[in-house]
Length: 351
Ligand SMILES: NC(=O)c1ccc[n+]([C@@H]2O[C@H](COP(=O)([O-])OP(=O)(O)OC[C@H]3O[C@@H](n4cnc5c(N)ncnc54)[C@H](O)[C@@H]3O)[C@@H](O)[C@H]2O)c1
Image 1 (cartoon, helix red, strand yellow):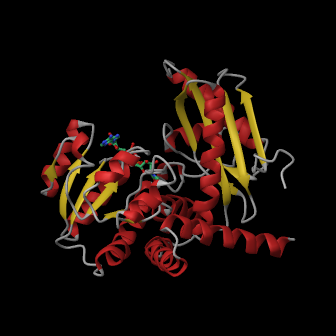
Image 2 (image 1 turned 60 degrees about the horizontal axis):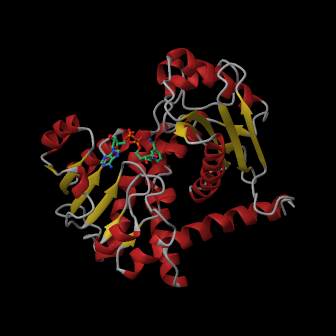
């Protein structure tokens, strides 16, 4: 039991970077399953405490994600909090990344960082100047590269089980999908769905992404119409929090599966979706391909084994849906239960 009851984390450190002056938090939630892995988010926050709170929340989510993915990795996350209105010059960016490297180094390998929202694989090269505990360096620098490839494949592997759960038929061809967000993951996923014969409806807040829609023969819609356009499946692939209570009340689909972290604005959204008969494939199960890619390739696993593990995310999704049905709980609760049972089993072995 933690001495501070509401703090379930093993170790949290927030420091003002000696070079950048920025507030940097490294949150190690759990190392029960192994050294923690989770990316570094560089984002704007109203106060440093908001950045710290985000690190606490995100690192706990990484514990569940890594456990559900079957990885021998615990959960952690780091956040570089930029004050509102910060102009991030190249010098400030470099200073912040070196400061992050110093802070990660103090955990002596119990936490490994990687890219996340606001950071890139090239940023990780700067972090490596101060610590070896960083993964996802660019391929040209001997690293394992961009995790979005793995994330997209893992989400794609989850689509068939989600369709099976919603329609009793796993066939992608002919099913309609609204893909909201055509970035690193959404763009790749849209291409895979198109190749599988899906009827694609796509959008992005960046208008130039329309070129991809044209190339894939997809119908382009305005971003604000993503949650009200009828389809079989909604694919959240932009930012989190889009599935608010009011959006869920009218969402005209039968299933939700996509890479976006925390697409539910509130946790109760999982129940509201279930009450509307909409199958929700939990985000941290289906988008675990990125951490699988980083962890296994970094450990030297052959590409074919990594691909098998990525496709195995579909089996995990199937198990989650089956557990939800058997126990009369939502898929989100089922996924959390599966992850927690694995952590508890490991804790007992270590005890
Ligand atoms: N990259 C990974 O490996 C990975 C792994 C796990 C989870 N995720 C999550 O998946 C999501 C996508 O990640 P990514 O790496 O593709 O990010 P990205 O930044 O490359 O792409 C996000 C895209 O969504 C668009 N977008 C933003 N807001 C939108 C809106 N309201 N409507 C429509 N489009 C919008 C952006 O313009 C961008 O093109 C994020 O939530 C991310 O946290 C990514």
